[in-house]
Image (cartoon, rainbow, N blue to C red):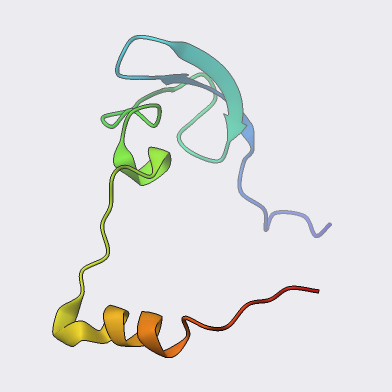
Length: 75
């Protein structure tokens, strides 16, 4: 590795919204800093998938489903 081109990799503490905490290595902050999360990855839809629905604008999804309904990928 080349010297003086890589970011400092050090140990930090991460604290979840519910108070749960753990230690990890990161390039964020300085050695010993605490990262307070505003969004909890255990409950936020961005990480859990949520109950997202596909919006069918101008019937595109239904047209796609009709067009490719008979295709199967059996071996």
